[in-house]
Image 1: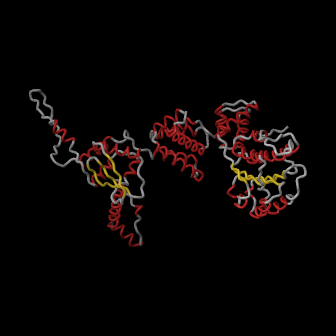
Image 2 (image 1 turned 30 degrees about the vertical axis):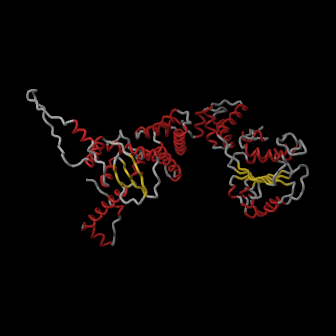
Image 3 (image 1 turned 90 degrees about the vertical axis):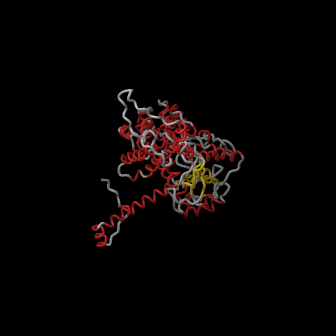
Length: 546
């Protein structure tokens, strides 16, 4: 006897054996119980979720000879059930619409509609992949579909229900099948392996169930391949090699290095992955899956993986979303890249390039200068005494007494920060703040209005939405630390003319204009432009460092 694949060997013969689709099965069972049968049913859904299988079981229920009435559970013993299962029942016509798309095929099929069934209750037409029919075929089917004889039943299945004409859908009872959850696929695979007495491990089952992507048939096909690849048993290493997947720990190690802005470590981790001879596109999909799990755990705390938990605590949620978008964008363009490995490497490099500047990573000199800048802008320009280094005397007798500043004056100096700012001072202070990339980008679009009595008022344009509480908190903490006092924030709406972002754009444009004017003053450049009628392209002007 020839080998029979698992998907055919264990095809459900009753509704109780169908995996998932409880909402569909309940509707069909109730219609049979109460004898409220529709003249046409449309089963729609993705591949391998049970459309044709449920239609065949339904056909057996309608024509089962165990009783005088249709049965909720077919007996699978009478002639009708056996013949429908074998595909040779004279009143059960199963048609593949992909191979019979013409109107002549449909007319030939409908010629026998008027004749009553010889040995069953219903004459059943099962049309698979019905969306493949031509427009003329659908038109030929319409009238019969709307008012068929009482002994005729139409069952149709399609994976692309949007291609079926609305006139046909309106004449059918449409049943949309859902994808099967991974846990149900895994339990079903496990039960079949137990029946087949095949050794397996839990990790292998999870890998196959995940790769099935909601399709029972795809899962059983992969199971057949895994059994053959593993010589009659399932081992996780063999299954990973077959599916082209890798252990998630490799990806977590890579993400850890990316989060730490460790380019060398990320390159070494990526090299470990590529040495496993896996598909680079599959690696990118696993990276996307890891970012998805991290993001979910940050909101729901639903992951039991220690690596996911650690990353969820250490990486800002906004950065996770940024990396997710970078990886997703790389995947969408993966098939057009001539070198898949380079596409994966560039994706990691983009993540490293868009890392936020942490406080510890900022140069000390820069932070000191920004602090001095704020003090210079906020402190009145009077009574300024330069610090002079006084040499220390060699003996105590010659020790010079240096009067310390009185405590009252010191306190007055600390409170010398004025309670008001102007727009120019504010823009300078804003550029010196140690903000994350997202907060800096949001508040750079806001214009300074006033600063009085520790209350900072900013203005945003009407098109911009208000920043979230998390963004406001980070901004207020940074400005409060810079000014040395607790600041309150008020955000108004109106026309923005001189926000830090607008000022920066104007500065860049002015610099560009100056560089352009300098070029035009060059006699050689001017002569070339006049001779050839040329012009200077702004984007081509670059400042060459000495």
